[in-house]
Length: 115
Length: 111
Image 1: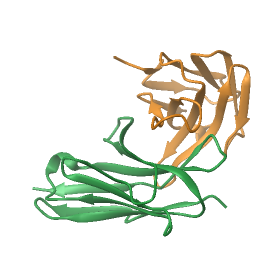
Image 2: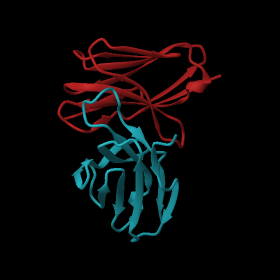
Image 3: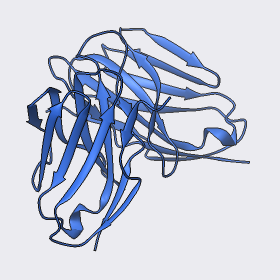
Image 4: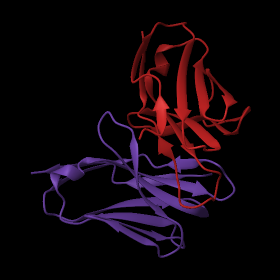
């Protein structure tokens, strides 16, 4: 019954490593999003994609990139991990904007620690 | 500026009491969502509100929307411990793909 799957629940990486966070959805949604969630700061949008190979920067894209080669998969890449990227990362997907009542469906989250 | 403000940030209440969480937003919106998040877990959709005066209810939770005031409320009736969680509102602003989330209200219901 899982609809949005994030590949890892917990991840520990070293400073300077290149980190890949994977997200796969099985709902045929056009839109996919990456957020990070930090205490006191709520959810902040990193990047989103409204179609294959299309991407747009969110509010805090610095230090991140994304890849969407297939409709169902949206990857977040930390080019050179830093300790200030320690956070909970949430992937979400949604149908095209203004279609029906469906909002975001979230994945279970990846708690990333950079040491 | 697209802005969503939620209050209170923290709410500690006794079982059986009623309370309301408020979500204010800055400009015209197409729709508003309420989500629940349990500790260490992801966000779960509760309600979507699409038009002025919309009201949705599920169990002890009732959400409403006043688009003229740019205000949504989440009312908790006769709270029980199982409602302890963080509640977020999210606003889809007209002409954008993305939602802006409120900062969340951390609710703790004391037995």
